[in-house]
Amino acid sequence: MRIVQIIDSLEVGGAERMAINYANSLANKIEFSGLVSTRNEGLLLDHIDQKVTYLFLKRKSTIDLIAIFRLRNYLKKNKVDFIHAHSSSFFIAVLVKITMPWIKIIWHDHYGISQNLALRKNLTLKFSSFLFSGIISVNDSLQKWARNYLNCKNLIYFPNFIIKSAVFFDDFQLKGNDGQRIICVANLRPQKNHELLINGAKEINEKFPEWTFHLIGKDFNDSYSANLLELVRKKGLSETVFFYGAVNNVQELLKQSEIAVLTSLSEGLPLAVLEYGLANLPVVATNVGEISKVIPSSKEGLIIDSNNLGQFINSVQILIENQHIRKSLGKQLNFYVKRNFGEKSILKEYMTWLKPLTTITK
Image 1 (cartoon, rainbow, N blue to C red):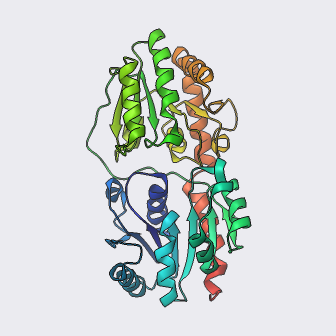
Image 2: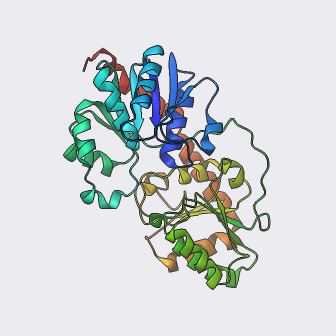
Image 3: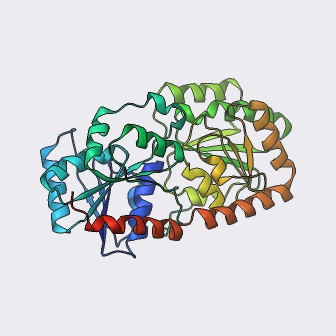
């Protein structure tokens, strides 16, 4: 098989990282594994395996003829069978397929606001889906939505998977004391509900002033992030809650942390929780999206109701006060993530699913 992953950017985000995970993992398993970034590069560029054939399209507009023909030449030169298009990159894949009808498009849906799918309307996607050979959804809700709304019946659910970075990055030290850091990996978007974390940090700081919170994720420099910074200032948490922006060495920063949290109002299947597990960290997370599939019981982590401040504070306090519980939860989550969200098993299912499509001409 000859497969290329297409993604709009290489900024730090879940869809972007999955595009790289697929490209890197497939590089040792198939004839050709490629990766195309259409609009922007970013911090994740450094994570691409040397065996992956990479192209940056420099796409300037929705219908950029130069970018389209650049992509077409790349696909033709490398005799690509499948375009694995992630999120909104499906459109340029469709434009190319019109001129190369033998190319098969797999669309990967990473939509993260699964609680409001009834409001999700996209006519361009709906009509484009006539040309899809298959659709991958990262959770059950998205798969049901695709079945009811889109025009491709070859649907499958694959959970996200995590791989260890093979790239070495310069050491970067988090602030605060070793053994007393709480980390949250989430871009600064409203659905991530950092307000809950900050409000909880105020209460926790009064009981455990040595413990600090470390927020990793892209700052879009909008009203949401401005409000978060103001909330931290008003609550007097400038030496307790720290923002670092987007980073390309998350796994290294997790090693410097003792507890991991995710306070989202909405999720798909967040890579952050998988990374927490890979790092042997105990987790407090809200019960949204597919998080309960990663943390199925109290043996693997502490699940709280969405936007429940009291539960958040109590759960974090339990972990602060009980090192034994922290170690046990981290160990169990690590075992569960490796067993159920490892790249080997998911890539095997992925290849099995694609194989019949190689004989189908669209």
